[in-house]
Length: 154
Image (tube, rainbow, N blue to C red; front, side):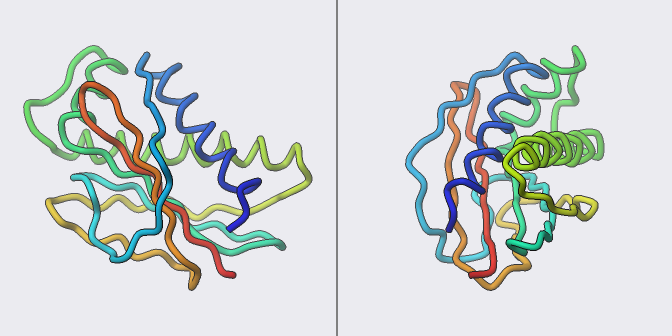
């Protein structure tokens, strides 16, 4: 897995959360993910295709962090996960991918993005479109965790 391809997504995620929600996320050690079960409650999944790679990215939020993110971004949040939170996670997924796309194009790597899909619920599955391994990076905050996952064809 090419770190040059992953770092712009991680950097974009940290930037989106700090600028849009005034929240700092601390990346933890990346690891190989062994199954398709999500680590959180709401996941945005987006497919990507370029001349160099085909793959997908997902961003998963634990419920508490998703609610706190919405409160910080729009000033209010529901008491539980609902359609507004699902839409918010889809938007964050779009913003992160858009930011990474800009960073990668500066390095001469261009790719097309699909429309993100959002899946929610305890123990939901994330089906990456690529055949390569899935790398997961936990991102922690005092209000909960988010997880960013990548999978690209080898």
